[in-house]
Amino acid sequence: MKASMPSLPLLLLLLWGVGSHGFPAATSGAQKQDTELVQKYLENYYNLKSDAKQIPRQRNSSLVVEKLKQMQAFFGLKVTG
Image (cartoon, rainbow, N blue to C red):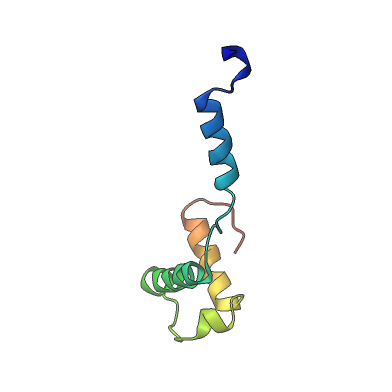
């Protein structure tokens, strides 16, 4: 009889696997906060001229992309912008 009963660890693993996919990874609030953090970083360390609505209004702004490329090159990262 013991051989036919699933073990508790296996059951817990299956329940965890099913339940772990039910929640969103990130919210738009977190994305907005990340965008603001990037803008502040570029303003402080890469002389990005501050326009309060620049990044949220125009995410692919050429000025922001250029500053990101400078930062990536400085840190030896693949330059993607």
